Amino acid sequence: MKDKSYSHILKSTFFVGGSQVIQIFLSVLKTKVGAVFLGPTGIGLIGIYQSILDLIRNATGFGINFSGVKNIAQEKNNDNLTKLSEEIVVLKRWAIGTGILGALIIVGLSVPLSIFSFGDNSKALIIASLSIAVFFLSISACQSTILQGLQNIKKMALVQIVSASLSTVSSILLYVLFSIKGVIISIIISPLISYVIASLFIKKINIKLQKISVINTFDRGLDMAKMGFFLTINTLLSIASMYFLRNFILTKSDLATLGCFQAAWTITNSYIGIMLNSLVTDYYPRLCAVNSDDKYMVQLVNEQASITLLLGSLVVLLCLIFSGLMIQVLFTKAFSLALGVLQWQMFGTFFTLLYWPLGVIQLAKGKGGVTTLIDIITTVFYILIIVLFWSNIGFIILGYAYAARCFLAFLLNVHFSKKTINFSYSSVLKKDIIILTAITMVVFVLSRSFTSNSTVGVINILLYSICFIYSLIKFNKIINIKSLLKRIGKRLI
Image 1 (cartoon, helix red, strand yellow):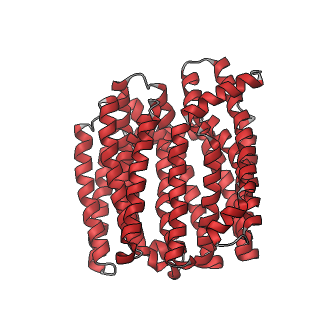
Image 2 (cartoon, rainbow, N blue to C red):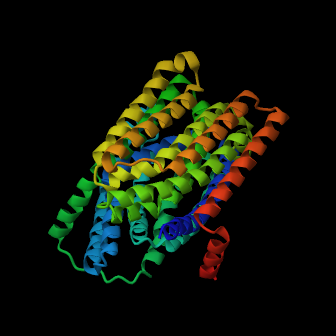
Image 3 (cartoon, rainbow, N blue to C red):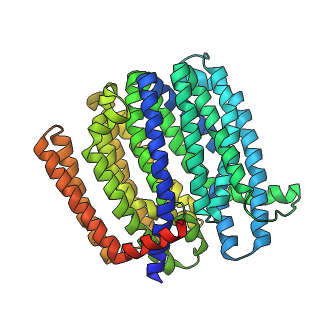
């Protein structure tokens, strides 16, 4: 039974992870073209517009997509097709309503947002045009929620691949043809493409939609919004802090410096974040489905944490070893200032691997307030370090603060997970954590201290090889890799 659970996790990771690898490649290509044709200033501009878009979208989304996954997963697990259909109808209607609300708010706040972000109202019209993106983000996210809740991972992966491919091609063409003027068009077109592609796949799902009154839709959607309230606060806190931070960097430096920070942030949170999301895409609805059984939840979290650590540490180490090369390849030499921050952020990301599977426990148990408390503490801690020490330490403080925040989040998640479901890492996983933490720390210190030493490079590659072999052996103990690949191959054929 345990092997079957591991097999399910790895199979889901294979499908979603494969699609995420393709998305990362496409994102790298898009970012590289943007770096060449837009430069640090253009990349910084994208960061500001994206912050505004994310802020409004999440402020008006009420967390219904996250709570929607939980509701759909539970009804699917109960085999209640009528209630499952009703949940989908409610989610769709609320997605349209919140999309319209977000569009109206971003238009109404376009002038003050322009003044706050750029010092005048010159970008108000451009910011108002983001209302189109807000609307289509809302309804396309709803479609992804349905696929995730139904645990239709293969179809979800296909939607992501096709959408990302078309979005990348359109963005590259816009960057090449219109330079910085193409940025806003690119941001608007991407969610529109995602909506069209997801709609085509959603139509193929054979579920007869129930008729629900407007009042019933509102009431049930309100329950979803209440459930997603704390998630909304968490997301808003994260986006608002980044919005503040980007403007703080602008006041202390310039758009080029902001662009360098955006480069480090993109590699750490976009590329690594994509990997982490792929690991928990199927995990969250599975955890929600068994949220009344604490003992089974502990087992499931340990299984997911083991896979996340073994796979994630390989990616983090690779990024640490080749961080300098990544900046040059993904961006240009003009972004070299980002190197130190990127290395510290990657080091902090290792601790993210440890707490990421634990962070979902509170949401699956309906205790979003705990998650909010953790996010408030860690975000305030992160911002305070930067604001208080920027004058004395400078740009690199962004990296120090990020790593410190990740470690604090790890400690808090372990503490609250133990209180909620009496969670503890298994003895086998504890051993993995000690070994991989030691390897990561050595690689980090060597990478930071000897950036261009060939001997250090060889040592790091050797350490990576040890980590790779260790992970491979561990995977083979968990589940027969050869047998798993054969089964997956047959399913693909």
